[in-house]
Image 1 (cartoon, rainbow, N blue to C red):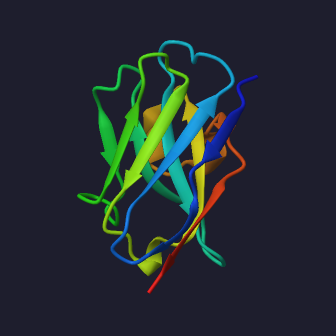
Image 2 (spheres, rainbow, N blue to C red):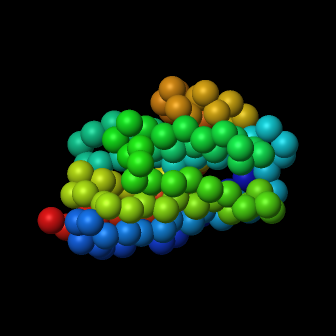
Length: 126
């Protein structure tokens, strides 16, 4: 069982930056993709970004393209989300996720994603 633990959330002013991290309890098996989702109060969980196991393919949600960057390290135990030009509408709990299908992530097949972290809160003030 893989455990995912997010960190790096906090309060930031609009236009600022934050970097989220996600630590996996063990090295993910070849073929596992990792990603980020977010959920704002009263809204459904939303796809943010995903990266394949090799790190060579990335996907982004339309609302974050050009502002957020997803990356992973060579150990396959760490995932990052660099968030720039933050807006108040980026305020949400951000969740780390892992699944054998990157399509499950960028198609927001929430119920099909294998592993989830407990989330970290990002608050962007105007």
